[in-house]
Image (cartoon, rainbow, N blue to C red):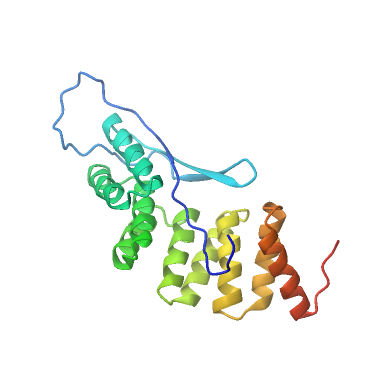
Length: 219
């Protein structure tokens, strides 16, 4: 990231674990495949910088396969095709949270903010304390000019997962550029830099804010 206006958003190949139907079990082609999740979605750190979301659900193998295909399309910048397939996944597995999040991110990529918000609000209805959904909602709220609400969304994500560096940096930029809360910006940039130690741009921002606020940085 080279400019402060670039917020960090996630489009991740997320693990959906589940129990598939037996290969020879007859079922209608469009049968709803998901049941009530057996465990709430989780966010776990994967290495220094990455995160993995996982959600344990009962889901048919064809739905899981279509979900992975949709993520591959999104990562290949085939956003329209990815959205189309994600919509099918959410229709067949409406109680699974993660595809709704990815759908929201994909709509945001095309600046379809109403559709993005609907998808993210569905995800938060299913999992009100999901840190990734809250981070993405913060981005959407920032993009649509609702800055205090964006801050609240980031702060909720961080209350759940304090080490979620995407939300730390996004909150820092929001406070810096949109809310003129320099102390908030510095605090969150520092917390981000404690995790992502090799981001030179954020190091510059920290030095700049420290100078403006008259705060000495520890060596």
